[in-house]
Length: 402
Ligand SMILES: *Cc1c(COP(=O)(O)O)cnc(C)c1O
Image 1 (spheres, rainbow, N blue to C red):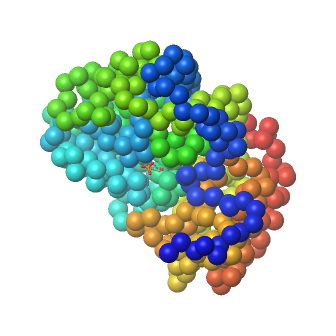
Image 2: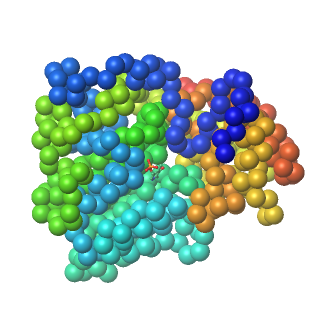
Image 3: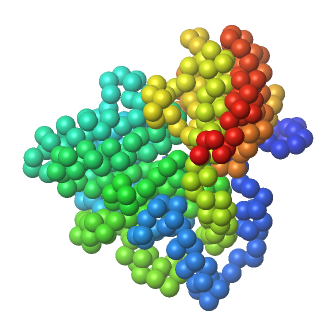
């Protein structure tokens, strides 16, 4: 039942790793009247944003925009490039990799799911050497694609996509490289062209600071070529008709007009600030939040400092504490939403989002809510994470982080 007695004052703290808070500037842009999606004004908007959006993917190739959540763009990537019965290599980094793997099976692909043994894979990134070894075995080139998640939102671990590309090249394997950066885009460094990615999948409600509802496929020439001959049934997701209509700034069906207003504003905000600056800002926040977790004496879910996520941090609870109990206390007492543990991590950890429209003080408040909630839940803390993070932010200017 909806609790109608719950009327907290002030702003809710939405510190889950997506949807992330939507800045007022984007909300205002989206509040304009919906226009004719076949009219001249819309065509001009479409052309402008289809050009600008390439900058965040760091690509010169087309970026396809769907009126769908990120899951739709996963399906679009698979259904445009592969055929039923195709073998694909997927890597288990966490819950989102697991869901994508399940989708591949439902689409009648033959996915092979590799990873580190036990729960290890959920605390580390993709192991490029394991991918290289598997591809070297596949002398008949039966594997048609390698599918990896760039920023595993369920754990707070990123993966080195350039290393995956190098592994594929070292094995001399022609498989396509499909990468989910739904939560990494515009918060973690990502380079579609430089890393030789064939399809990059992303979504609106994470680093792009938009509400949920639109998602993306950035493509390569090789991916487009594959889409001309693949045999998976596709219609709504088919790239060909969208790319053709996009030439003039339109879509073959009704696009999410107001979300596209928001996207246009989001791209202006990101590009005016400069992507490098945006990424440095996220790295610095993540480092401040990790300083707090370490001061509490708690463990970070990611066990490889080289791939700590700049987007979110997974905080592991001591044995005997249910992370969801802690989250509930924090939500009820402080009106602060944190990410739940997903799949194999359920109850073991919670996730602090530090992406998009944040600043030092929203994160200090977030850490304050966490610290108080942990104490209320009876979790023993070594020291004050809030003080440690305040000192970190005070002592590390953004200029120094760049
Ligand atoms: C959020 C997310 C998804 C799912 O996207 P939806 O918009 O919920 O469909 C998939 N993969 C990753 C890495 C995500 O962060």
